Length: 366
Image 1 (spheres, rainbow, N blue to C red):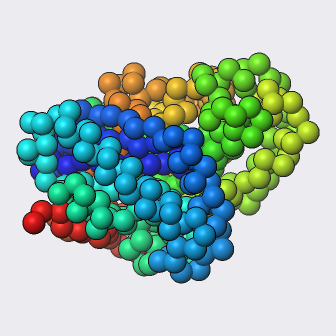
Image 2 (cartoon, rainbow, N blue to C red; image 1 turned 90 degrees about the horizontal axis):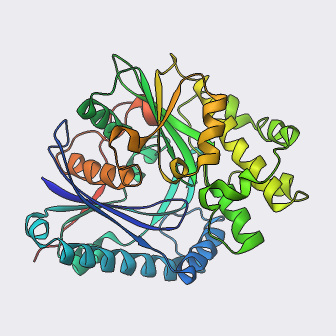
C-alpha cells in the first residue's frame, strides 16, 4: 500500500512529507520526500496556540488562537500535499492513504490528555485522499503515554537495513525520544528530555533566528556544568520508562543570565546529558546509537553526544537512512498499520496495557 506520511514536529519548522510503499509489517519501499517550511507568521501563530493550549482540559476545545491555528495548519498541509503530488504524478495515481500527525500543542498523558491540531476530515476533502489522523489519542485514553509512536517503524527500519542489535535509535526534534532495539523481544521507548526546543526558543528570543545553525553559537560558548547538573535534577530523568513529556516541560530561566553563546552551549550540553541519562534506563548497552532528526545536523550536539555516551554514535545518513524524513515515513507506516488493524503502540513503548491500534480514518474519495 502506498502511503504519504506528514509530520510537523515540536520544532515547528515546517512539514516533512515522505512516500512509503509498505505492508505495515516488514516490507519497506521508500519513495520521494520533501520539506515545506513554515513562514515566520505561521510559527508565530503556532506559538500563540501553544500558549492558549496550556490551560486546556477538553481536547476538542479550540480557544484563543487554537481555532485559527488548526485551520491554518490544515490548509498548509493540504497545499503541501497537492504540490508534492503534482511533482510526482506517477506516485499520485497510486497513492491510497495519508498519515497525518498534525501539530502537538499539548501533551499531558498523566491527565489522559493529548492534543494535536489539524482537521483530518478537511485534509481528506481537500486532497481527495483517505486520511488517518489523531494517532496518539487512543493510546492515551487507554492509559498509555501516547508517545513515542515511531518505535514500530524503527524496528522495521532496523531489520530492513540489517542493523546489528542491540542498537538504539534517537530522534532529536523539539523533544528527544529513544527506541531501544534488543537482539530479541520487543522495543523499549520513551522521551529522553528536551532536544532542540530549548535552544531553538533561546535563539529566537535572543537573535531572531529559528535555530542554532550547525551548532555554531553553542560551539562559540562555554558550557556551565553547574547549570547542567541543576537541570538534570528534574525528577523526570530518574523516573523509569515508559514516559513522555510536553515540549514546554523545561524553562530557560537557569541560563537567562548567560551570554547567548554560553546559554546555547549549556542547553546543548543539557540535551546530551539527558540522552546519556536515558541510556541508564535501557536493559542493555546498545552497540550503536543512530541519531535522526534536526539534531543529527548539529555537529556540536553530535560531538557532545559522542563524548558522553558509552557506544558509537552515528548520524542516520551513515546508514543510508534519510534522517530528516524518518518520522514522516513512520507516519505513513503507522497509517497503513492503523488501516489494517495492526497495533501501533505497545506496553514497552507507551506503557499501554496491551498492544493497541489507533488513529481516526477519514474518507477522501467521492
